[in-house]
Structures are given as C-alpha cells and as structure tokens.
Image 1 (cartoon, rainbow, N blue to C red):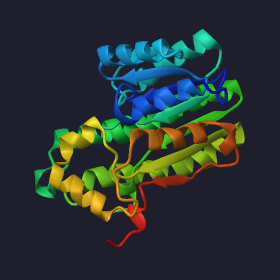
Image 2: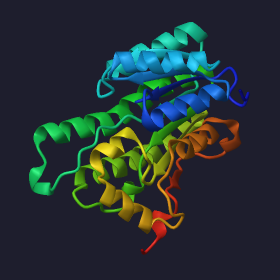
Image 3: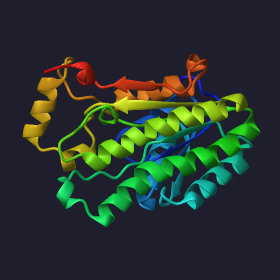
Length: 252
C-alpha cells in the first residue's frame, strides 16, 4: 500500500472490470477510499469486496451513468461517509462498431449516453462536491481514437473526441476552484470489451502498427490515472495524455 492518495475519496465509473477495475485497484493501493460504480450491482459489489480483501477501502454503487441521479447518489453517500470528495474517474463506455449505414437510434443513444452525457453529469456533480473539499482531480478516459478515424467507428471516435472538448473547457471553468481536469487517451488495451469487438486478426494488425509492439495492459492506464489523481500532476489541467504505445504518431 502506497500513501500518495491517503485520505482521498474517489469514484470510478465502469469500475467493476477492465480499465476501470484496474484504476480502482491502483487508487486503493495508493491509499484512496474508492467508490466502484457500475451498471451491474453484483459486479460492483464483487469488485468492492475484492478491493477490501486486498487491504483497501471501497464501496459499491450501481446505476446508469447516463443519468445525473446516479452520480448524485454515489457522490452524496461518499461525501456523507467521509466529509469530502476528491477524485472522479469518468471511465464508463459502451461500444459497438458499425458501418455508417448500420448506426441505429438505439446504438447512438446508448453510446452517447454512456460515453458523453455521463462525463457531463460526472463533472457537474463531482465538481460541486470537490469545491466543498477545497479542490480535486477529474480524470476522463478518452481514447487514441479521439485523434484518429477508425473504420466503422464514427460514433465512437466522435464521442471520444467530444470528451476531449469537455476536458479542456471544464479545466478552464473549474481551475479557479482548485479542480484539475485531464484526460487519458488509451490505445488498444486488452479488456473484456475489446475482446467482444476485436477479433484475433484485428488484434494482430493493431500490434503490428504499434511501435512498442504490444497491446496495452489495464495497468498501463491505471498508473497514469494514479499520477493524474495525485499532487505529482498538481500543475497540470486540460491535458490529454496519449497512452497508446506510439500508435497515434506512427505511419505503419
């Protein structure tokens, strides 16, 4: 257990698996109390219990992050328990790739609700609580796709590019309150969601195009989240950090 985040209180959306789970584990290992927010209550509970079993302090929350009320309930409970709220990681996303002609209203609504609306509500609710605590750090999980055009990825690329716009503007508005807002832009990371959407041939092509020659691991992203949550990044705000093995800058 590290102590760089000792006494801090955090909430991670989509925290029960994948990148979100790894971020929860890292923040807890660094001393933070972590709220694990997931749409599936059983998964959130299992993740929180695992963190506690590892020596951390965690609580489970369930709800649809496309709804402001989900953030209100989780942040209010954490603030009531600990008298403060310091760190928010907007990680949740639901992804389906589709040709432009195949995009449906349901697909568009779910992807924008989970990946864009949730960031708006999270920033709004989280910032109110952080202001009462004297400041904080908001970390939005964007994507290398924020900068690229992916085949059959128009909605995903659009949502993630939008997250960068939210990050920059919120950083300007919230800086005077001591609230920093930054984004992490992962490349291809091996998660449950990637395995649903990316077949072995696609995975091999992604590795071949990546200068560092591998897919990312969830711990690669969690390490950067820990840095942005801590005072080690205390003079950084409005930034978008690529954690992609160099693929965005490669012409391979």
